[in-house]
Amino acid sequence: MNTKKIKEKLGFILLRLSVLFVVLFLAVILTYLVVNGARVLSWQFLTQNPENAMTQGGIFPALVGTFFVALITAIFSVPLGIFAAIYLIEYAPKGKFTRLIRLSIRNLSGVPSIIYGLFGVALFVQMLRFGASLLSSGLTLGLLTLPWIITASEEALKSVPASYREGAFALGASKWQVIRTNVLPYAFPGILTGIILGLSRAAGETAPILFTGVAFFIPSLPKSLLDQFMALPYHLYIMSTQHHDIEGVRGIAYGTALVLLIFILLLNLGAIIARYRMRKIRRA
Amino acid sequence: MRNLRRIKEGLLKQFFFLNGILAILVLAGIFLLLLSQGILAFKEISLFEFLTSARWSPDSVVRPTYGILSMVVSTLMVTAIALILAVPLGIGCASYISQLASPRVKEIAKPVIEMLAAVPSVVIGFMGIVLVAPFLTKIFGISSGLNALNGAILLGIMSLPTIISISEDAITSVPSEYKEASLALGASRWDTLVKVTIPSASSGIIASIMLGMGRAIGETMTVLMVTGNAPAMPHSLFDSVRTMTATIAIELGEVPFNTTHYYALFAIGLTLFVITFLVNLLSDIILSKGQRS
Image 1 (cartoon, rainbow over the protein chains, first blue to last red):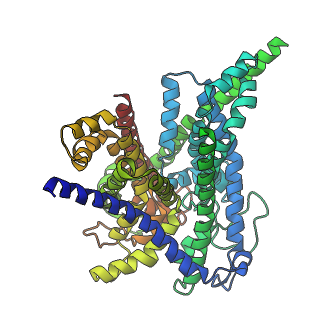
Image 2 (spheres, rainbow over the protein chains, first blue to last red; image 1 turned 90 degrees about the vertical axis):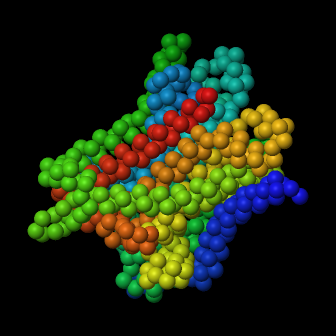
Image 3 (cartoon, rainbow over the protein chains, first blue to last red; image 1 turned 180 degrees about the horizontal axis):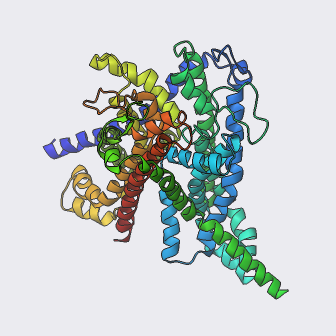
């Protein structure tokens, strides 16, 4: 074998190793959390309140809080995101202004999450006087999710074949009728996977809710939109860095991390599988 | 009847347009709000001190100082090391997935990398505390593993999915004629990859690195949890550092609203926003240029 061949072999091994390395990261994170988190995971852990200054008991209020805040995020960002995508794909003329909109969307998705937190404090908590509440946090997360939902919906709308639109136009349908009866139904599964991915990421965020409504500990579930709430990611943060007995509650931290990760990975896996299936059906 | 329909269609168009420009409004709104709040800090702090002093002690009774230099340096240091770790690994992965992997491997590798991107930053930070920190103390014989290096390793991992997916797109879109020409001239596949394909994809790869950098600069929870948060000028990798994001996260919950300290945190936010905005904008320009040519 000449040196050229050897170099090539070595080079390809290196590339292979780099992929292996990355896959290994995820595998290590998963196994480590599963092994350590499984010990505390039980039905009680999921359905009980934290007890004895959060050294015992479960994570029920954090679980419910995360669900509620994700719901408000969705109510706010999903319609706006889909409407914006409809404008960009179906109505927007090609030109400088449309390019500016797209540039803003890409740039918004790169704005650090703590900046959204600052924005939420100044706008929702202070100016609009929603206070630190479920509503303020949900709206802040909604803004954060908006560019992701727009982008995903745009992709889904783009994938609708032109013949679907043309066929309906030829039958005399108006623009809105075409969108409502032909474009949206076809794009719906794609939009849905995008929404699931976006919301799962929002549910895992901590920095935007840090000052807009999440609470260290509250004994009861939020009763109104203006109540504070507990959330899984913030619970993990305090259990691993802020609690007065960090070593003592490590088990609860592992359990919280595992529940959060399972929750998010399942949603992601679902979305990925759905997308994969859809591609296969469309190709066939 | 016809008119009614036309009016309805026109109204709907206006409605969708309003939603369409929302992104511009939000982006401008964030900037203006940060600016209007941040600028109030400079009633009492000099801009020069803010940018050039390394002393951040807003609670000092004698003379509070608001210098962000040490935080900026900490942020840049952690980000730079993260990229040094992540860039070769990311380009390696992207090249493999794009050029060598069988369709089956590709179908597994891509979702796995996507899942890595989905792991919440608090979970990554938690892994930094329970896994990376003990590992670092053992290997380097240091007393605490909560330092700049720990943060950099985690930020590296977190910027990998961005770097890999965008680089992979860039490498895949290199015209196959380039490769074929190189192979026909007798170059090995490795030489073709390193000397032809990757250089041809360089604009996309650079853009991916910049996007990864933007993400690392703005990441909050991970660095907050693992870098130790000592507000001082860092001298080595093993120093405890406090980034711009971590400072906002730590102090915003404690300061009373509408004080100089509160506004100063918005000024940090504004600085951070401007930095990430420029980084993202630049990568966007590089990417769109690459696509046009």
